[in-house]
Length: 161
Image (cartoon, rainbow, N blue to C red; front, side, top):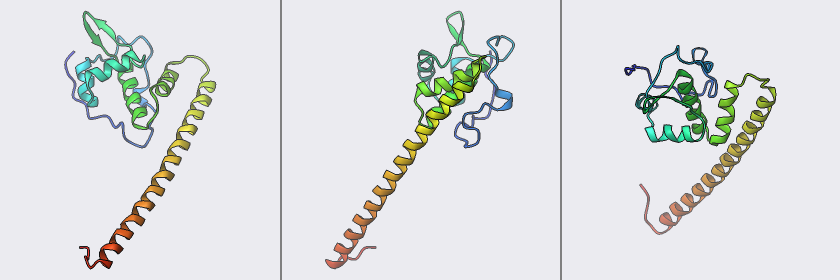
């Protein structure tokens, strides 16, 4: 298990925010044939702490094997971690992320899962749109306060730069 140089993952790219690329589809449970990673390697690759990875394990998002006392992560775990970080960046709860990531592993009909996740995404979109509206109102109020301050300074004979 030697460290492998990889480019930094594009977890913040807008395209395919929740899709695993074609070469990163979640492999089946039989992952012994693929590459293995240590917790240190994954932490370095994704610029997170080993403690964060262990937290995601505790939440059921990752299920590494053990080699003695060491955790051993498969390509499946790596992809699940990548999707988890994307979901976190998008503001989804870990429960929602887990639901999405588990969908990739499901062998059953995913139509009900997809519908449920579409509802989650719709709710999240509405929350973000409300936040955006609130931010726009706050920015307008800030502009009004600035204009008032500039006017008061000008009236008092203190020009601004």
